[in-house]
Image (cartoon, rainbow, N blue to C red):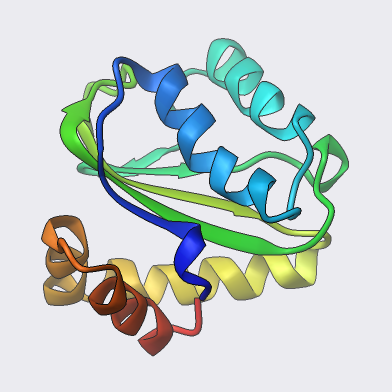
Length: 144
């Protein structure tokens, strides 16, 4: 994973800014175009906070046809947790943004992410880490 796809201890005022900053990492590196974050925001309004997949964790994503250029993954941690409207899993501290060009890439990414989510120690370290190189080492263990 490229270091510029990781941002730690970011300040955000609300969930929309989290989307802009998290997906913005992918956009800056050419993985998605600007439509992608708009679709994610539309999906939150349409379907609610289903992307808040676990306590303190949101997985920002949309469909391949919603602006995906190539498969990618980014990580953003928040200095101050943000509410997304999830009764079970708010507030969010760890933001994964991902995009995939097809179902095969989608399943590989999700499978590797699930392995990370099941590793309590690695997940805890990821949420609290201040060093990008250490985050990169954790992520690379899971082929993300």
